[in-house]
Length: 139
Image (tube, rainbow, N blue to C red):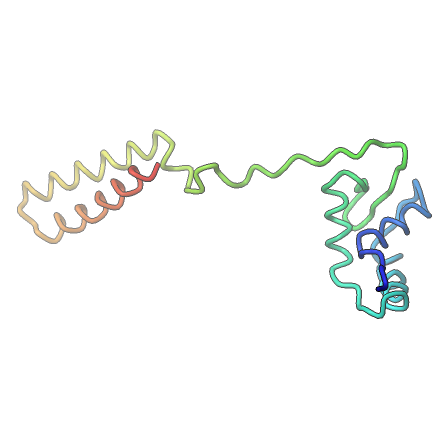
């Protein structure tokens, strides 16, 4: 059984051969892809994304877009995760005071519809308020 290095190991071997040198994608991706194919007989996929992952894991340092450096003396510190997603996975508006104001306004329009005895307005606002209540139960 042939045990070949993974693509990430292969890329890291290249960076270890060139420590503290700024290496741009264009300088090494084609060369490494062809050498990986010669060694394993397989095509190297997602070479750039592997470099980005090594950067996210703190192994490589990013100088600028597409340029990375391997510093053997630097400790590998993973980058902080992005805080784009909320823990609830729902839009932030449901946790803010503006949502309360929105819901109170809807209820006021619902009551106005009742006063004017307009069934279309009443049904419309009833449906919107039902959706709001449904999301409140999930929160």
